[in-house]
Length: 301
Image (cartoon, rainbow, N blue to C red):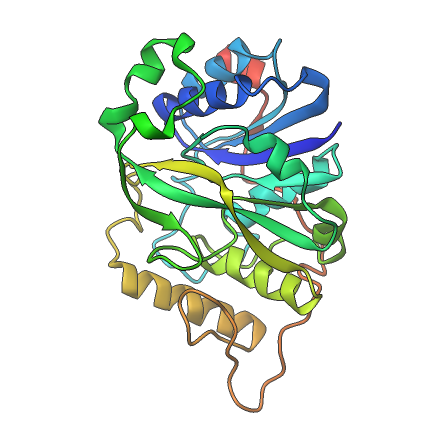
């Protein structure tokens, strides 16, 4: 097997349908890659979608029930009390069968042949896609008609940059590929985060770069990020600046350091040591006992 693609999902069957088709149309043989799906939804729709393509794609699927309901209003919660994206991705990393892993944002469509590019990741690099936000209306017909693939970037409407080294947007490890052994030796993402985007992926990126694993954006590797609403949860109404500040304080409390830059965790308090390269010394990629997990068949039934 050449490539393991890891992604988390939450009740976005419309987006996930387009994503699956944009992967299937690339012509890779079923035995050459796998999808590792951590389904955070509360309905059976996602499970039914992935079951419908199980003959065409190797799928590892786990449903984490009531994930959003399990969150506390207190952002500063230990990992054993609640579950977060870091645990999900780490579970995927540990269970991946390929030597190259693709961490995939949950709401993307693949433009052109992305799998070949991800597979060509050098040993000591993170190959990151350039991503643009894409207007939902301009891709509606891709849900209705399977014969319209592959997606033509000249016939869809991009609204802004989502991830690009020289454009405004997120600069983080959110959709890219890396050799599994590089993630294993650092024990993946730090599982002490309550939740969040940017913090846990950037903290991992910082540790990788300290090991001379370089982040490289591929200008020809283009993905579209589908615009969407955030799920309704007890933290969704927190202003983004307060939420990110809480995330930084949370990690400072646990690890004794903090980031001055919201985009990249690089700067540490004077007099403090950088955090250890090895995260989660007590174990990683293990779901807390109070979080129920189910298989695809169990969810459908």
